[in-house]
Image (cartoon, rainbow, N blue to C red; front, top):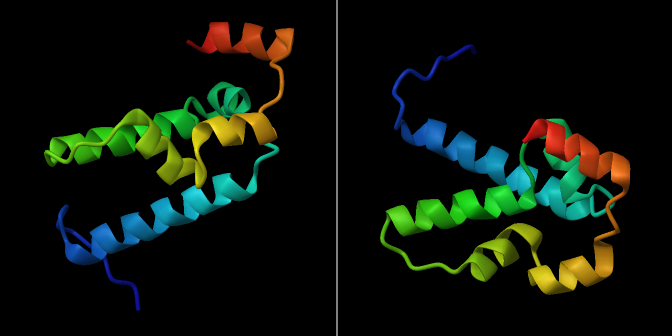
Length: 102
């Protein structure tokens, strides 16, 4: 069956978007070897961007959410813990590439 969803706020469309978002977040949680700077250099966004967008969406609905709360939702653990466990030093090439991309 090939059904096209035409309404922007169609409940099925929202369900599909939510499922894709959850899958992306799960994928990023499992790929701790991929650094945020690499995501920024390749895709133009990173885990911190996602957490910021999540926080913005909550705030738009008048739900108070701190940056740390949003980051914990995306990272699955407190951001400070993630940084200690998984974040590596950026090399000069990564930093140079990021400057070009910004």
